[in-house]
Length: 330
Image 1 (spheres, rainbow, N blue to C red):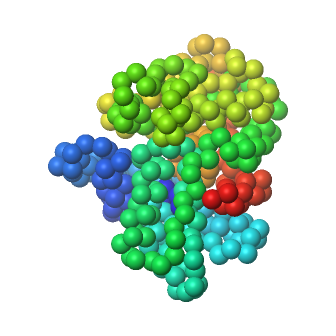
Image 2: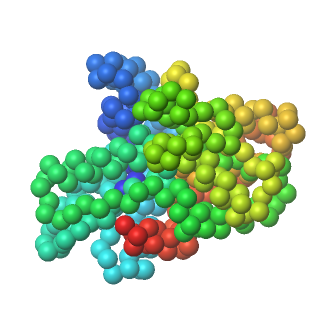
């Protein structure tokens, strides 16, 4: 189960997709009346034409890169296992209901379905909404098979090994800084569910020490992934850093902001950067356009000399095998 994509690059389809996405209470966590005004009255009318243009810049003959790559991942998995594999998206098509209906139709005696939300880290607006929506559909439709959900795999050895191996070839060149750019979330998504003082969202190397908090702390988990990968790659601390992209609105989001830092790094002597987006396992708008095009432009205009975007793992063979180990553990 991946995030999803509009059906086409038309403004009409972008409005439909953005409405479904942004009206999710786990994405914009304000009262529904206020969320409706924000989304339907302000954000979607202004954002849809810009988003349509951004999607057009990365759209392929086969369609949305995210959908295409996720389907390719399905095909790669089918070559490695006898288990049937279906793809679904949290928003847009194909829906979880469509995927579960296919399984029910083709395998009437099915006992269990293992759902893999393709999010390594736990956040309300990614892993949680995917898992909870799938459970909601499963209950509503009354499927007789059990639904088993793979937990966040941010520190799983198979994931870390695959991620580090996918990044290693891009680090053979001369570079000043490796940037781990994660999708951002509002700071309140970290602090809202926990007692005051449980998290330090401004500490560069950690976020929380309580084990229960860490299970649902996005910031703790992305820091952990970065540290484990850096250790696997043998990188000294001064050669890598953390930042957050894709901010929406004016509320404080996790910092530092990638776009802001891209404009500052050349002036600080970091003129050759390599950038990875480990919050995603499949390339999408946020990696290909936001970082690959817009981020590159910001950095080079600020005086950067080289900008290398590391692709997501996509269908990397080691990732495919790692994904199967996650299923086997479920």
